[in-house]
Image (cartoon, rainbow, N blue to C red; front, top):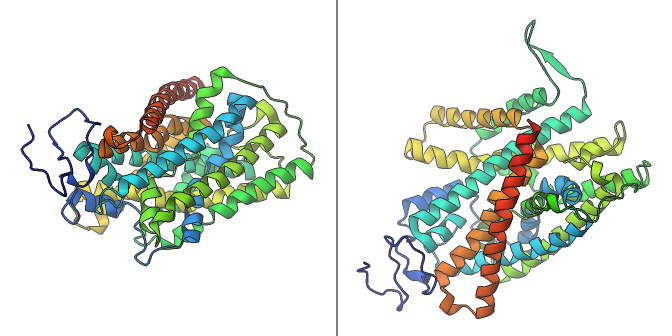
Length: 446
């Protein structure tokens, strides 16, 4: 039984001991689990996230930051996603974009409920207390960790495409070759970046993601028109069995929600974030759609999970495309894994900054990603799994659940409640079918 009094202008109190979510009453500012400057867990999560600049960013700068957050390796897999679902599945791409854009706006509204909210985990804490913070943090960190593994697989595949037949002999009976060799070499190069305390240099390099995305689309178009690949791929109209994989990969393309609260907080005029978000999603959808159509028209059902691996060998434009794909994963690996490492360090070291132990923890994380990348070297299937399970959770389900919990159904219109419930139901269906399909494909490839 809750004994707390009403506070903050009569807002309904929250009972941390109540395990069943009450969506009727709004929480707003009365949540006892989130207090600015007093929540040690919040402080740790703030350190684990990319903190906004104190000066405040303009709408234009936030627009580019938002594009960079949404423009990633999903661009490489989008033709493969279309091949999995067929031409008609392309209709689902803007639908997924619209849903993810809407849930991004829900996160913004959740942030307006309390000035103490600075990051996504804070929204979870405001809505569901400690369990909410844990659920959001676990989903975010798992997504970042698996995407980092995908980066290693991508780097290994791309370098193997550039330098086929490369091998290294470690003894009379031990030979490491192909993408396995390159995954190990890339991890050795990346490891020092994990020990950097100031990631600003890498952040500037990773910010080139917007330009890199445009360069990739140009390279694929050039290969089709100038290098003679042409548009010979007919493809299928619809592949029902591949729809779960296609939806998982479509969702993966829009998994920028973990940084949306940070981007919103960094703005000088936070009320314009919703407009910036819409522009970012429209621009990225046009780019993703263009790449999907180009790649599928060129190669049909034979397109590789990374479209750059389908480009003709030996051509300058193909090498340019592959080198472009190599830059961002290299720079973003540390940016992705550092929040995970920081969270682990805070738990294990209790805030003590012991450089040697920190270095060992981060080295162990890198080694663990290498082991998984070597064990499950299936880029398309892994990204489908991430999109189906974690991206759906972070980008669709959690924003809706947190929003309903914070504001309550009593403060929402009937149409809004119906829409949110539909997103939760359909998102859960996509997560279940997509996760099963991607795991089945991974097991089948062993």
